[in-house]
Picture 1 (cartoon, rainbow, N blue to C red):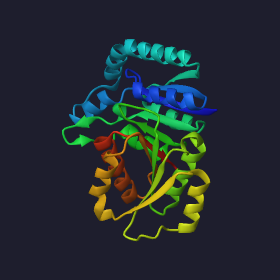
Picture 2 (picture 1 turned 90 degrees about the vertical axis):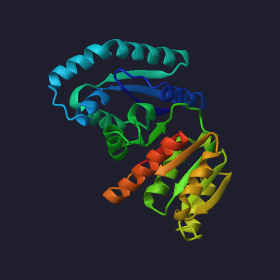
Picture 3 (picture 1 turned 60 degrees about the horizontal axis):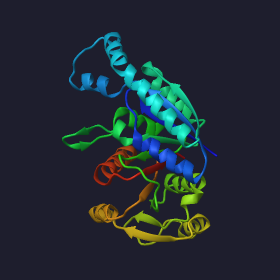
Picture 4 (picture 1 turned 135 degrees about the horizontal axis):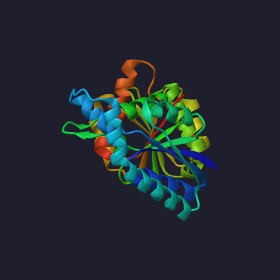
Length: 274
């Protein structure tokens, strides 16, 4: 049984994230915890407009406006879990400690599911990662599954490999958490000018141990537009990627890559820390 953590904003309920949890449960039983977090969008709006607002006043407004929505979200969560006979619990976090409490909870979860519709506000320039999502991807102590608006259990797997320990760790974590999905067709995508995979023999042994239907594709980084067009033609895909590294350069690159994948292709993305 997997212990899965769902994160919701207090006045918002991601049906896609909930549906993904249900689909995983149908395949393999889960224990599900819903963590309701304090509002992120409204305070961010005030910050972006550079308008000084009393925290106490803002919190009061938010709480009054969201209380009914929170109750509705909790009812919907409970009803869904009861319908599919999912063992479940609810944790409610408030104030500035909401994010740190969620990160602490992730230490005791096998997987954290996030609906990207809640944590990636759309602007005229496209999707950007919110501070909440950015912090969670960097600090979560369990793998994270980012789920787009329409969520279905994947039927194909794309493994991103760059020769780093982070990318191989993500592949292993995906295999450990979702052995039932490993029989699906899978492809290892290696972004490099070199055709030879780093640690070729070892990587292939790992893949053979977990993915019986696996192929390997090497793509020159200059052909990233080709990769983008290619992946857009794939249906029922989950993308498996290593987590943000500690260096700021690596974090910026991967943040941009993940954001572009969510914006352009709306596919689930599995991310794991080493």
